[in-house]
Amino acid sequence: MTDPTSAGGEDSTSRPIEPSDLDVAISVARQLLESRSVLSLRESLRLLLRALDAEPDTEKGPELVPTPGGEPMTAKTTPPTEARELRDLLAAIREALTLPFDTADYDRRLIARAGWARAVVDAVLDNPGEDIGWNADFLHSKLTAEQADAEARASKRGEGQ
Image (cartoon, rainbow, N blue to C red):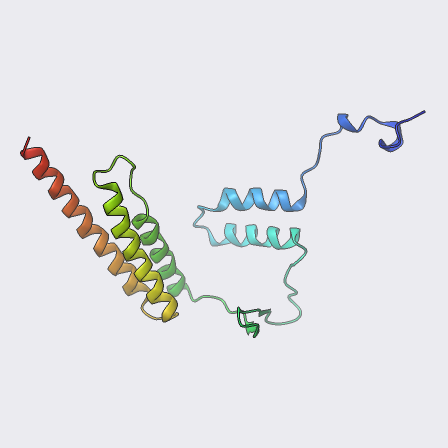
């Protein structure tokens, strides 16, 4: 008598388990997370949408995107200039929230940097599409000045020894 759980009497443990479409899409997305290639990112999103059975229907026209208030809005592409400004802002925020753990005054510096990052995010969210580049430049300049101050303090500590 054959095992009812095996197909055709074969041992099911001898066959490799195929990853699901979602597993593959997640793996690709993780690998491309740091990519700066728009085409790679688009392909990753396409795979993820396919795995979720949510591919956009290109014959319907613009897709409507639900908003938190429930009102749908038309999805639109981000102009290249705004996309560059957004990437620059995200890079500045990542820089603000990244310090080596062995940095002198780590806690104090990270709290100050997080506060600046939060202020910039709030400003961008309060005024969508306006002054994104200015906010990125502001955060970069605050981080540059803060780093120079930290280096000056470290230099003074070194002279005092």
